[in-house]
Amino acid sequence: MAARLAQETDLSELRDQLASASRVAIDTEFHAERRYWPELFLVQIQVPGADAWIVDPLVEGLLQDLAEALAGVPWLVHGGSQDLRLLIRALGRLPEDIVDTQIGSGLCGERYPQGYGSLMQEHLGLTLPKSATLSDWSRRPLSREQLAYAIDDVARLPALWQAIVDKVHAADREQLLSGACHAFREASITEQEPTTAWRRFQAAAGMTPVQLAVLREVCAWREAAAQDGNVPPRAILSDGVVVELAKRPPPTAERLLANRRFPRNARKHVPELVRCVQRGLACADPPRFVTRHTTPWRTAATLRAWSLVEGHHHQWAPNLVLPPQLIDDLVLAWPADRSALAAALGPWRDPLIGDHLWAFWSGHTSLSLTNGRAQSPSAPAH
Image 1: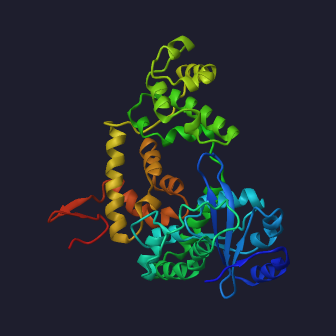
Image 2: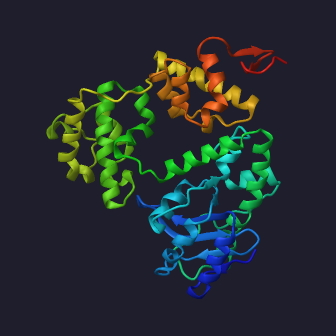
Image 3: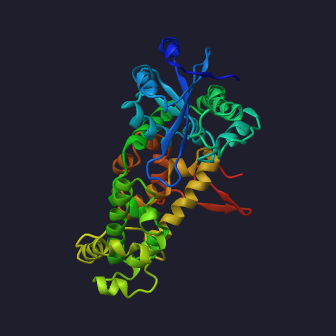
């Protein structure tokens, strides 16, 4: 499909198309390498029944002139969390109604998240080339191959979305889809606090409470420093050094510098790191985490197994409906009754899995093996 490169003279026509559309497909191209905040280089807009547009954010004022019109029409995106973060910074606002193909597919199938090509193959039977995936989007002028790739990503989204919605409708989950997409929008535009950065470390599962407190402090400092300098966190301090500091916290600068594995290029950060370590060591309320080889760890593993079997039987994606972080939160502070579980799951997850999960947790149903196959506790035996 040919793309229209938006120019100042085209904006009134594009605004008119946006105003008359019931929903538009949106995609972006950006570079995230060597920076904390990705840099936006292209915005693609597909107006169903009208034109496919490419808006160049490097043209001063062009994207901002479209902000009101773009925010006034519902959007369709694919795996759009990064797109939304970029566009809310560029436009200053977003529409309230934003749907995502990955969310929709996760409510009518087991896999989440799925790539664009995988979804196109599964739902429309199309195999797509990805020749320009790692293209340099900062260069101008853009090549024909780049333009074709950019617009192809967004032009096929409406047909993909319709195929997904048909399956969601057949499963009677349209209201759940609306709630899940709203939650996705809110999570995407909420800036993550540096104090939560420690949760991304798998090594945390083997740490003591004191070590976790140090890890939280060091990670929060590194994340804030990366944001301030617009560089990846690993450019401030490698993950390996962060884990080493948490596992063997040095309370003084002398102890820290005595570690022969401490990198020379990080010595300028020694005062800040020592203060982080000292705050962690003195912390009276360390973070809670599901530590390996404990009762919560085994319980979490059981719930993951339950979600895999249930998700297969009922066709929903465990990573979307009962993601690892939610499982960990539940096993660390399990709700006392059914209504408390509903509050913990939220307004779209609870109608989907709340009753089955509560029955499993309460011992009224159980996982089993039948002829070597895992059996869903809410499905009839075969």
